[in-house]
Every structure is written in structure tokens, then in C-alpha cells.
Length: 510
Ligand code: NAD
Image 1: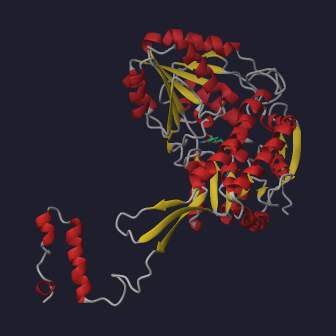
Image 2 (image 1 turned 30 degrees about the vertical axis):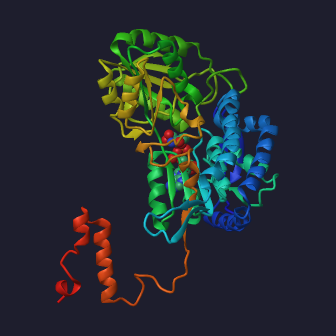
Image 3 (image 1 turned 90 degrees about the vertical axis):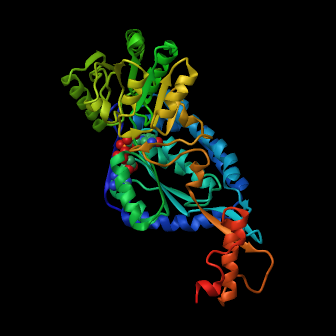
């Protein structure tokens, strides 16, 4: 066991929550060895049996929901209502969903060869073995337990490396799992930062990574040394486009929710808003009015916003706003630390007069900020929306469904919401993920579980002939037959099919 420790503090109160030993490389290797043993037993179970265990696990999560909410809120500073409304709700639904969908999407499939009809062919999905999940801190339950569920249903063991800011949620979840009949060590947690994450990549059979672009690139490079598969769910800078015919009430409500939920610390937060000039003033007025009504407070209070989760993020947000203001942006509300609380509280902020040379428009903002830009028309909005290194989600508001559909086609992102926002994540049937710097993997949908498997194709001979045409020995007769067959199968026109190119074999090979 490593002698180094990790100190965790509550970002809303700055009080210490506890100290944990950091897992060394040797600890991670030992955890992987234990997981490999447990996986053998788990893989042998049917989907039905795995589902039963996970449903029991869900019951325990529900029994312990208050304790869970205490832990999540203390590590993140988010309001308690967020834990029930977003984190626990998602994980309970994910368990119900994957326990049904796993078999449907992983079942053995018969393949009918178009040519070799004498063969029986089956395609199967096999678990990869031990899956490592490396998570960020913004949703410590969703991005640990939530991602573990499909990996487990596929028959894998799972080792979670939670964020160093929020390890207690994952530890609590793993302890609860041990109270079910899940094999011992099938679901483990290793605590630590980058070094522990690296050790995990060096040991497991697949990495499911959610986090920043910069770290995602490190993960990919390290995984390349072992040629293990990875999935990368990275950052975003999601645009919202509001066209002049939009339902402005719904658009404003969706914008405030989509930009400020979890203090804006969501990968698919709305982070820049483009509004057609005809409705710009009215729309901005509606946003400011709504943002001013939001309540910010302690996690136990009935509030919409808590604290931000880390000092580092708070500093990044302040730097981005300073840069924007220096370059000419105007703060309509917020724009400062909320000093009523001891922790990392930043007031929800609305910025206008922003431009594309500002960091607040170019870089990911994990904070409670809504930058709004006026545009002349839909084409300009689209051009600006696509002017980003990210491509996770995008939002379009318009009453003209054909136009909104056209815009959705032209947005270079992995998902698009029309007249909606922040909703993709809770539709597990639908693949979700990014393009460009937002990564390339998909969570949810068939890909969301098949990524935890490798495909194995099994070909079975049906007739038991003593030899086959291409097998040894070779002969001139066999070669001539092959040449004739190629012509018959693939030359165009029936006359051509009958004529062997180059005449007889003797003529072409004197
Ligand atoms: P981060 O990249 O700093 O850290 C993510 C995890 O990687 C942490 O557990 C960290 O300890 C670990 N890590 C750091 N260096 C490592 C290394 N060299 N090798 C292996 N592991 C390493 O991200 P963060 O600040 O924790 O989270 C915020 C980011 O996560 C944002 O960019 C956000 O957009 C992204 N995110 C994406 C999604 C999505 O689905 N696309 C969801 C949530 C968050």
C-alpha cells in the first residue's frame, strides 16, 4: 500500500472531508489481478443472473439515497436536489435500461454469407476482461457507477479511478456493491490522481475515459503502447442558436437551465448563445430576468445553484471573464465571486458583446456563465457555432421545423437538440458523444455497451468435405477453374462472363 495520501475537502464550506491512501502502481496491478479472477465467475453468468444482482444493487442505492446525497454534495458542493434529480435518477434508470438492453444488443447473431453458403457463421460479443473507468468530478455518481453498469452487464470486471476531488462517492458505491452477490473484487475503486490513472492504463484491458481534451490525449498515447481499446468522452463548448421565430419563453428557460445546471459544470452545458438580431434584445432581457431570480446557497437548501467544485475551475472562469471584459464584453448580471459563502461560489453571470477572439468563446468554461452574441441571420449563427475545436452537443430553437432540421444537419457536433437542451444524456437508447476535440466514442445506444466487448466471429464447416478448392495441393486445373469462376461471378455482361480473359491457361502462361 502506498504511503501517500489524498486530502479531500468540501468546496462549499472548505472543511476537510477526509484523507485516503493513494493507490500505487503495485496496488493497481494487484487490484487488476483480483479483478481478473472475479471476472471469470461473472462472465459465466447469464444476462438474467447479472441483471438480478444489479437490480439488488439499485435497491441498496435507493435505501441509502440520503447517505449518498450527503457524500455527493459534500464532495461537489452541488445542491441536494441535483443528486436526486440528476445523479441518482440517472443511475437507477441506467440499471433498469442496461439490464434489459444488454442481451438485445450483445446477443449472438447468425450471419448468412453471400458467397460461402456452405459455411455456418456466428458473430458474438465477448467481454474484454477488466475495464478501467477514469472519471472527472462533475458527476461523481453518474460517471462512475453509471458507466460501470453497461461494462458489468457485458460480463467485465470494473476498476474505477474516480477524480481525486470526489473519491468518496465511488468508494461508497463499491462498498454497497459488495453487499450484493456480485463476486468479490468484481467492482473495485483505486484512489489517486494522474499517476494512479496511468497505472490503470498500464494494467487493464480497456479504458473508458471521461475528462478534458488534454488528459484524453495522454490517455490515448499511453493506451497505444499496449494497444488496448479506449473510449474518450471529452470536453465541449456547446452552442445554442435562437432564430427569430423561436418560442422565446421556452428558449430562455432552456438556456438558463442548460447553461447553469450544476453551476455550468456539465460537458454538454450551453456555453455560447447566438441570437438573431430581431429578437436579441427581448431574449437577453428574458435571460437576465431569469438568472437574477436564481437562488444560490448551501447544498441542503432549496436552491438552484451551489458552489463550484474546485478552486482551479473557479480561477479559470474568473480568468475567462476578465479576458472577455478586457476585450470589450459587458457583464449584465453576476460577474463576481459570491462572498456570502466561504467556498467556491461564483454568481451566475450573463455576458454580452462577446466575440470569437475571447477565451470565453473559444475554450471550455466549466462555470455559471452565459455569453450571448447577436447575429444577422441563421447562416452567420451556423458559421460561428461551427467555429470551434469542440463538437459535442448543439441546440437550435425555431418554430420552423424544416429549417431547424437543416441547421441540425449542418452543425458539426455529435448530438443536436431542437427546441430542447441538456436532454441527450438521459435517453440511453440514443448514442451520445462528440466529434473533433470532444472525442470519438459513444456512450449509450448499442455502441455504449459494445465498446466494452470484442467481437468474435465463429465459422463452422457444414458438410465435412475432405478438401476445399483453395487448399493444397495447387494445380493448373484448379487455377483455371478459379479464373473461370472470377469471370462468371464478376465480369459485366453475360457474353463477357463466358469468355475467359487471355484465352486458355496454356496460351496465357506458355
Ligand atoms: P481531467 O481530464 O483533468 O481529469 C479526468 C480524470 O483523469 C481524473 O480522474 C484525473 O485524475 C485523471 N487523470 C489526470 N491525468 C491523467 C493521466 N495522465 N493519465 C490517466 N488519468 C489521468 O478532467 P476533470 O477536470 O476531472 O473533468 C472536467 C472535464 O471532463 C471537462 O473537460 C468536461 O467537459 C469533461 N467531461 C466530459 C464528459 C463527456 O461525456 N464528454 C462528461 C463529463 C465531463
